[in-house]
Amino acid sequence: MTGLRYSQPKFRVTLVVAAAMTAMVSITLWMLMNAFGAIHADFYAILSAFVFFAFVSAAMLVRYLRNEVVLAVRPTGLYDVRWRAEAVPWEMIREIVARRKENEVELDVYLWRPQRKDSAGKALSPDHVIELAPLEAGAEELMATLARHVTLRFENPADGRRLDGLARVEG
Image (tube, rainbow, N blue to C red; front, side):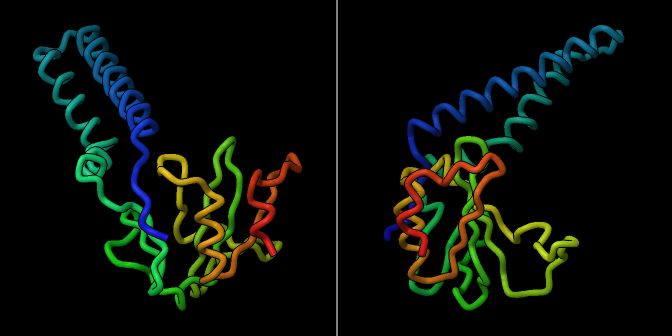
């Protein structure tokens, strides 16, 4: 499997949402500062817009413009630029759990190390969560490739629905 990049149509939607959130934050700050009679309210509103946008989406924007590989399943390990600069070796990965979050599939990555557990013995939080929604390929192809390298488990949501399109990879 080659590396996955950010999907262009999905990225445009994400960028519009980030711009709208930036505008909301800066306009709210501007209104509050003017309500309390602060001087230089315009300057602080513009400054907050730049800072908020930088923290929300600047790194993602740079990766998108460079057309970098964001996620790759390599023979040596799992590479996710949003997590680490180098691939995580397969020997370090205990399991990957696929779960549905609303209408998207997310992958929880658990490494071989002591982890905090709840009373039922389930790990409280994964070491890394891979969000597949902004990427160009579907979950089915990625899951089939991952199954060749690591233990894969499917966690059904509380409402009993299956992970659509992924049942044939399980096994």
